[in-house]
Each structure stands twice: as structure tokens, then as C-alpha cells.
Amino acid sequence: MNLFLIGADLPFGWFGVILYITLSVLCVSFGITLYVDADLLQMPTEGLLSALAKKYPEKLPFHRGKLFSDSLLVIAAVILSMSILGEVRGVGIATVISALGNGRMVRVFEKLFEYVRKNRNGC
Image (tube, rainbow, N blue to C red):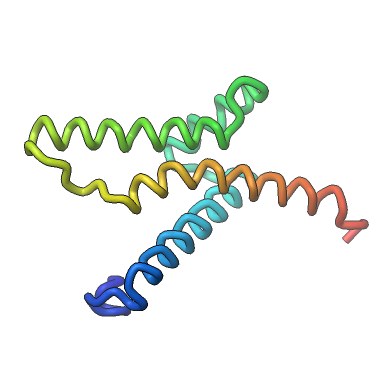
């Protein structure tokens, strides 16, 4: 779909790639934080992490579990790709940045939501 919208060429070169990755991490993290915070029906991974975060809030907060699980899945994908295909396919720099960035950005949005709740002055 993206190729249809923006074409196959990289707009603005590497700056455009970095911009797309950054916007992707921000949007995905914000969306995850919204639906986890609202306690809506969650994807299996986030649901498990949310349940663990409620059970063990000090040892495994949601954002730390998100970072761990995403990183573990990327490592598993690399290992399986190498063992089955003999090369790494389907895991690029954007995948690694997303795995490392989503958990951290979820924490930023969690803090932002806490701040807004404390300071909304009866709105």
C-alpha cells in the first residue's frame, strides 16, 4: 500500500527513511499505549504483557515487557531466517529500531498520560 501512495523511490533519501521509521514508531507506540491504557481488547502479546504488568508492576512494567518481547521476537526471526534460509530475510534496520523503540516510546506516552490525568483540573 505504501508503494502505491508514495512510489518505490525513497523520498528525501535517507532522511525520508529515518523520518518514516520515526513516525512509525511514534504512531505504533501511541496506539498501543491508548488501547492498553483504555483496557480494550488487546493483541495476544500486549494482552500477556498487560496481565504480567498488573500482576508484577514493579518487576515487569508494561513498557519493559514490550521492549523485551519485541527484541526476543526479532532475535528469533533472525535465528530462524538464518537456519532455514541461510540468510537474514524480512528483518531490516527498521524492524530492529521498531523493536527497540516501541517499548521506550510506550513509556514516554504512559508518563504523558499520567501527567495529563494529574493536571486536567476537573475537565
